[in-house]
Amino acid sequence: MAGPSRLLALDLMNCTEVTDAGLAHLTTPPRLGYLSVTGCRKLTDEGLAVLAKAPALEAVTALHCPNLTAGAAERLAFATQEGFGSARHPRLSEP
Image (tube, rainbow, N blue to C red; front, side, top):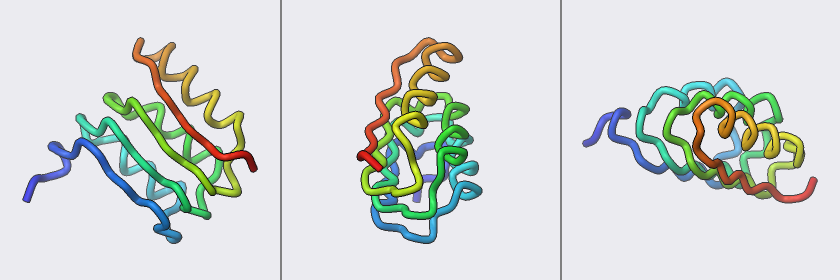
């Protein structure tokens, strides 16, 4: 089984117990490029902001997360472009 250093994509769709603190652990897999947290109802803007530290993350899908705002997606995209020079493509549903 591949360790976290080889993790390229992670789909946490409808994992309703995922929290902001849990997302903080996803900033360390160096190759994680895609993350789906669709349906993770406990996540907030603060948790999404932590993902700006993930060095290879290129796409985040976070639909049907009632505590996330469009502003969180904009901040994540901006932080990524400023900090790492690569485009991020966060996708959120309307609150």
